Length: 192
Length: 155
Figure 1 (tube, rainbow over the protein chains, first blue to last red):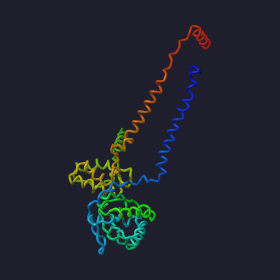
Figure 2 (cartoon, chains in turn purple, yellow):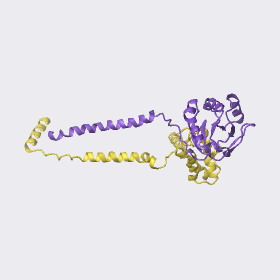
Figure 3 (cartoon, one colour):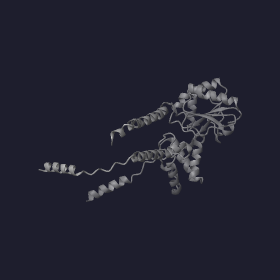
Figure 4 (cartoon, chains in turn blue, brown):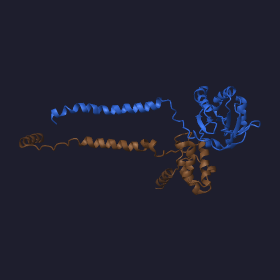
């Protein structure tokens, strides 16, 4: 190879050598963005959003409080449906949020005891308080599957027409209530 | 001889070892044809609690419920596709271990092939740039010198 021929190539070779570095930087940006976005990769988005709540009829847990059926949803006003279980630790964690909410807000909370022994569920409510206006028991967990529940606790916002408008999987802390639940409830109350 | 045979048999038995399914006998259907279909369907369904396992492999409570549900749907006369659609309607594409091919997943399905194609094309283009010149044969003077050097070495 003659020398004058090699000289003009030198610059493009340099750029070529930088190409892997540039690609690496792009990958770092993509993966770094995913890691630091704060998105929980284990969270599964619900496909039930904006769809009518599934059909179900569940028996009451308590003697003095009614159970829950599809016909109880969509009576013109939004409601909260909360799947809980006495055997689930995060449910204990979130329960005080609901007792506090029930004391201060008029939106009804309907509870569904998911795969729980009735006696255990009753003891749970006796210990921690009962924020629910209706409490049903889903012993087989089949209604939960129809809702797309993949773990307890899960909380659904149902609008006045009986459509599922929002789902929160995991314990509803006071922060979650303030930032995620209350603004959506307000919006649902205004547009119905 | 007997010992070697025994070792071979033992190794063969190990090869036959089946994967440990979480399916319990009381979940299984009496009809072997339906049960076989349930197994095939279950292999495609993700356990939503432990996301890298099929519902067949998982001991999670929800996986058990879904296995029972799959068998119930089959007994009710659903086709395999209808069973899968039933779960997709509730849990979305997340319930499928193999994501469907659609515009949103094109990059997932075709990305690796595209990268290979681009890299391959680049490689071909890069190598084509100027073939190596044919080697120039030695002239007489050079050949004489080379022979002299080789002779010197040999002596």
